[in-house]
Every structure is written in structure tokens, then in C-alpha cells.
Amino acid sequence: MTVQDLAGNYAIQGTNQEENGNTYHGFLTLNIDENNRINARWKIGDHIQHGKGFYKDQILVINFNYEGDERKIYKGVAVYRFININTLDGFWSEKHGNPLYLGSEYCVRIAEPQFLN
Image 1 (cartoon, rainbow, N blue to C red):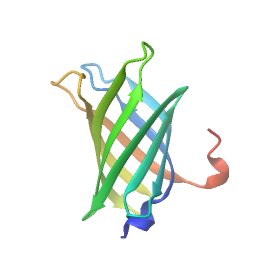
Image 2: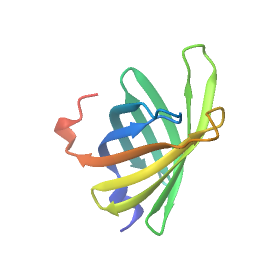
Image 3: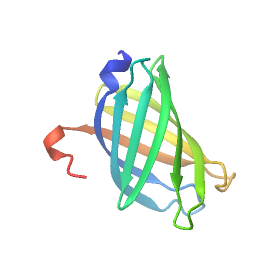
């Protein structure tokens, strides 16, 4: 699989970086830039996150950030393993999250017309 194969839209289901691991659903869009690096955008409810990353040997690593409700910028890293061309399985951690836990995300490719957010 090449980095260009990763581009597309994905439906995500994840758990937060906390003891009870509250679940969430949303969308992830991956685009490839001119340097074969990944540009990522998550949309979870009204919440938007952006990230940049790279891909090698079926592993995708994305450094992400977002602005919280109190106007504070949060940063973290997400790591995904590509199960196949349509499925990613990953985990993530934020700098100020609970260091005892990791968040998780499972992503499945969706067709462009289904991507409504």
C-alpha cells in the first residue's frame, strides 16, 4: 500500500483517554500533500481537529491539535495501523490527557457522497 492509497474519508468510532473510555463517533479525512505527507481533519460533533503526519510500513503517525472550549490549544499524537485499504485501527494520546490511559480509534473508509460533515 502506498501513501496515496490512504487519501479519503473515514467514519470513526473511538474512546477517550480516560478511565471509563467514553465512546464517540465522527469522521476523519486524510489528504496527501506535495511532499507525500498526510494532512488530517477530524470532525467529532461540532469539534474539529487538524493534524499532519507521515506513513511507513503500514503505520500512520499524525501529530494533531485543536482549540478547546476555553480557547486553549491541545496537542497530541495518533498512531494507526492499516488493516487493509479500507480499515485503520489506532490509538492516541494528548499531552495533557490522563497518562494512565490511551484513547482509541477504529476507522472505516466511506464513499464521498456519504461524507456529509
